[in-house]
Length: 150
View (tube, rainbow, N blue to C red):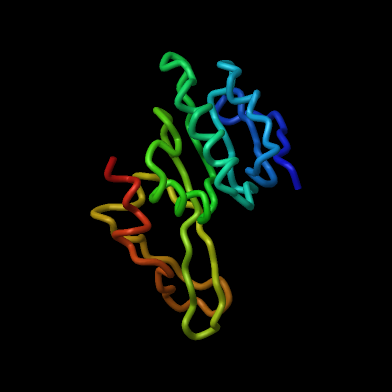
């Protein structure tokens, strides 16, 4: 599905909700609108190299006096953030989903974290919603939380 946009509100500011694929047909014009303050990337579900290149160039060109704050970033978004230099330009990630797994139930879970929830690249402890046992973080913590060190 091509990238689609929905307007919303977050903390009293204008929110851009993105959903779909970041591919070669992507239209990133809404990112040029300085009235948007927040971007929700939970439903950004696919990224191709051509779309990523357009994304990086668009965010790099955004005026520094119109900051963007990314919220509800998917695990995939964080993985790209850690490997692509300048992936969010001069913007900031405020919240993101982090992957956990229950070794007893063999179920995967993603929990929404804020930057301040992570201290020294250690994932906060979480409990399985099914069996109430402590979950294991399902990525290498140093690698997954690398973007927080910038």
